[in-house]
Length: 250
Image (cartoon, rainbow, N blue to C red; front, side):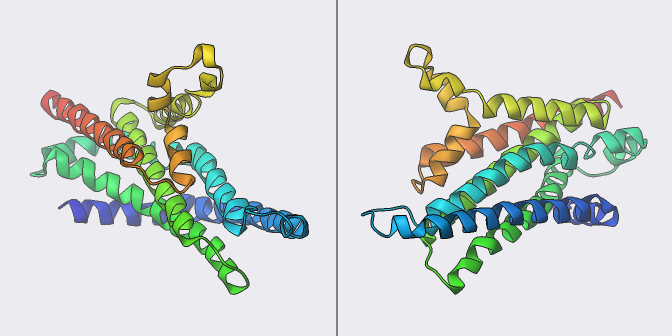
């Protein structure tokens, strides 16, 4: 049943022009940023040749590409997830869905996987850009994998947050703004960490940006992976709890 709901949700995204538009715009934007970084590397390569331990293709091109993708997806994910439950509620189909012999867990996880599928497709398309550099250069495949994993965990957390806001908000716009607000707060949470007198270990741990950058550096730590897994699981459980409350009220 989870797979059926996920497949239906994934297909419904491509029925409307939303998914196609998002994929096209993001690919063009990220391709431009990618080519800009390639040009930058070409310009500074003669200087790097005389430096021991100088950064290579992966550090100058790949890592910034995934970093830029994370910021862009912070803006885009709320738009993709805002309709997951809100649209069902507005179209008066949520009552039918909740009265069907389907568990709340199946509904939430199915919708989560359906939306995540589109973002996973986008992450894979982004990964094709740095892989194209293998035609004429060498990449640090370990660091490339770390960046891929970091972005994968990041969009998983983004999607879970968007799904939760869609279950509690009464309008898709409110859900999108709420999701963006939560994610932006967690993104900038440790900006004061650089000031020693204002440093907070709690803010550093809660900061989604810090864990994302730690993985991007190539140091795959269980602490960072556990953070994203707990983050995602928490918002999925909150979504299930919220939808359960709706079912009891019906």
